[in-house]
Length: 448
Image (cartoon, rainbow, N blue to C red; front, side):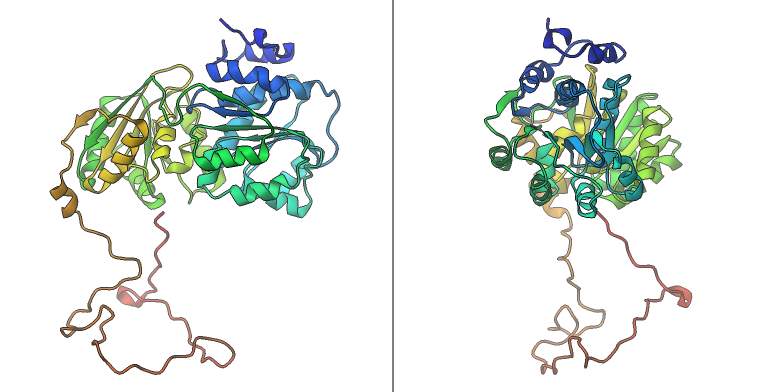
């Protein structure tokens, strides 16, 4: 059996590893570490939860420990880019576990936190900078950080960065990094765009793959329960009550829906928290800490947390709403069965979600086992009310036959065009809508 010592890692890293739960390298670690230590560019493909952070983190730290002197002011020796705040925080935490007792400094910069404090943290330089693309660009434009001495670039969860539209940010950041560098790209799936990124930013890379892209961890039992949308909350309650004391992660589709579900579960007596885009970074960090410390039994989240939560005690993942992107299903359920443990995933499928289910099963190349209910037929799907087109309005009450949706009769004489703005346009005061009692009525927030 291969050990970390067999891989040639520094004795200081081996000492740090002895204090962790990592006793032997995972397949991705055993295959990737030797190539990275030799200075090769690498493209790693592995399912979520297989130890990718240590696969690039340990050999990277090994090489940095050999330098022997601190970086210059505002300079960075290694840059790790990841798409979400949760994932970057997880990476930083893991690296700091490995660097205890060493002079290596790890710095985190993400959106939603004080840019002034982040600038201060970078003032004396950093060995490893873990960052989300947007905030890093902000700091580069302010002159608060320099990548001129950056010799290592890691792109983690590269496929998700593409999904989130970070490709343009990546191009802007890459211009600041020397061409003479070692680049590592890690991804759970392999769309064509990833091949193009690898061809652009990696030089003669070694390709390491330990599982088929998109294949979930073998230790996760999966299933689907067919249920009407309106019955999902009570169904979730029944499943949570079947497993008292076991932590569960529940994924919703929208920020508003996830928060509403969280509050409902709280009224039913569950110790529950939520993470989504409407939460500040401080709120998200506190909720994750409470969940990690087992102060919460249930965490309701959107796909913002589908990558980046590494909590071995998560036993169950519930897909309360099926994801629109089938690859996100793999990342969602990958939040369980971590650190060699077993896990369970259950997906709730309403009639309107049959398309999402079929896309997931196509990706997995297998049907999800039936746990409850019966698959929806064509009649059930057709009976689901279709949402009105965005911006469309129905006929006003009392409108005459033949009137258009806006209430004006067809064939009416066209009116003169109204001024569209500019210096000569008449000013129109904004008046808030008023509800009952004449009070101003609050506007609706974003649903997603």
